[in-house]
Structure formats: structure tokens, C-alpha cells
Length: 123
View 1 (cartoon, rainbow, N blue to C red):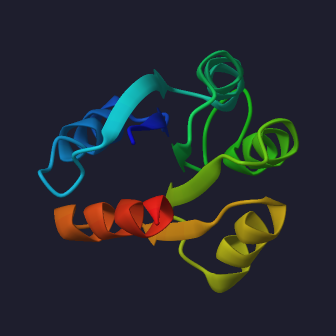
View 2: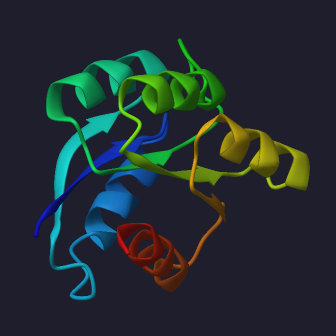
């Protein structure tokens, strides 16, 4: 079964890196349905494509990741969210998980760390 992924990060470099890593042979059933540079764009794309998985940055313009997680968790409760953020303190991670995220990956991350985190969410 193919799972749909939405990549959300204000950095095009990070969005492209995550998209490239999704071509990894360990992730054969992953289809990227959208790339968003801010939370508003992410909510619109999520409502349009109903992704199974979302990678979510926390620090973004227009709508931050916390607000975006809250909205997605309410509107698409079956969507699993992996926070990918440079904010690494436990309080930030717990807050994101309380709002509806299922995982947290700290930037900078290795290729293997991202692949493993996505595989964990796909299970």
C-alpha cells in the first residue's frame, strides 16, 4: 500500500533533502504529494491531498508548526506527523506531541535517522 507524504519546511534545502531521501530503497511505498514552505500552505495541501504522513518544521512564516499540527490533528486525525526541527529541547518536543505529532527528529539529522523515523511512522 502506497502512503502519501506532505513535506513542510520553510527551507527549500530541507524540503528537497527530505524529498530526495524519500527515494531511498527502504521507503518503496512512499509518494510525495506536496511540498509546503509555511503552515498555511501545508494546511491547504493537506486538506487537498489527505496525506498519511507529514514531516513538519516548527519555525515557519505565516503559521508556525505548532498551530499547523493542531489544525491537522483536528481536521485529519488519521494523518501521522513527524516534527523535524532545530528546536531540540524536551519541552518543545512534548508540546508538539501533545498537539498531535507522533514523532520528533532533531536537525541536523542523518539520512538514516530520517529514513528510520519515517519507517517508524509508517508501521
